[in-house]
Image (cartoon, rainbow over all chains, first blue to last red; front, side, top):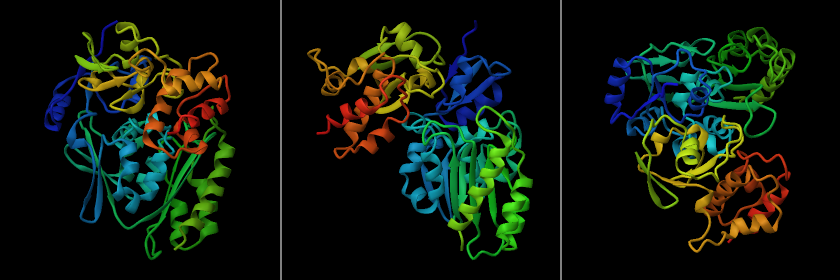
Amino acid sequence: MQEVKYIRPKSLADAVHIYRTTPGCRPLAGGTDLMVMLHARALRPEPEAVLDLWSLAELKGVRRAGDMVEIGAAESYTGIIASRDVQQHLPALAAAARTIGAAQIQNRGTLGGNLANASPAGDTLPVLLAYDAVVVTDRRSIAIDKFFTGYRETALQPDELITAVRFPLGRRVGFRKVGTRAAQAISKVVIAVSRHPGGAGGARIAIGSVAEVPLRARRAEAALDRNDVEGAIAAVAEDIRPIDDVRSTAAYRRAVTQNVLRELLESVRT
Amino acid sequence: MRFTLNGQAVAFEGSGARRLLDVLREELGATGTKEGCGEGECGACSVLIDGEVVDSCLVAVGQVEGLDVMTVEGLALQDGKLSHLQQAFIEHGAAQCGICTPGMLLAAHVLLEQSRRLTADHVREGLAGNLCRCTGYTKIIDAVLSCRK
């Protein structure tokens, strides 16, 4: 069995260079997904090396920059929850981060990892969609609603690294995760809902664990933009594509999505 | 690569991509840390890195270079006596099979360091990442609460 090589870059520039020039290299941050798959030898193709981004200062921290908040791709959920800027401007992100695993996972999990892993059940991903977040990489910015392109597939190029996530300020987002218990649960359904301040169009209804990607429920959003709440709740059942799996059934997910959407729309009524 | 394990400098030669859990148990003889699920679900392999509780099955050993790692072996006092918390686990019958106990102790140690006004709810939330299949948690929570300063 060949050992996987461990590479610790000195800086972000160093990491970008190594990632572009080293075949078979996988980025590593908090390891909450990658270390499990690495140990199980479940990664295809099998990596020859891991590139450890965890301790790069450029990928840490939460910053207020003008009319947005920027969070480093390798900042931990614990750091996100503790941030005053997040508590004040992005309370739904703090709420979502608190539902992820428990202390052990919150101390290691990152937004960059949640995005790159692109699980349809990723707990922060509907929140990112509802806030109109922007994924910043070593070379460009990607609007979050263009980021998820298929089951665990993203718009990232093979040699592209996520460096930060930017959140424009001003949206009020409601969040709810439904799982089997309060901690250490993978979502059956996870929803984030936002209405634009003033209520004039721009509704966001984003849902995880109900399709191959975290998705925006576009028909439901259109109904909400016409102030048709009942229409939105009916339409959301057409927007989602849930399946039966070990965690839940399609029928349960459809019913719960509609019920939770109703509850959240009441909570973010403008 | 080098790091500090329970206050002692240790060195490890090999790939930094190996799991911290395996290096602790197989290379450094620190077998107090247990493997449960190997997927970050159960918390049995919890250790502290610079005082933060993490699952050592999810950490690449290269990531602790230069840092302080504490395992259950580091809880006992210098003279070899059990800590107050370890003693409380014994007195409350908070361990049965023992697989979850090292991780429980370390996660609880962090809680007790962080807050002087712990409630049962704080302990339940703070230990939510540590699963026990034997005792049903009540005795564990009682043991932790008995150690409030």
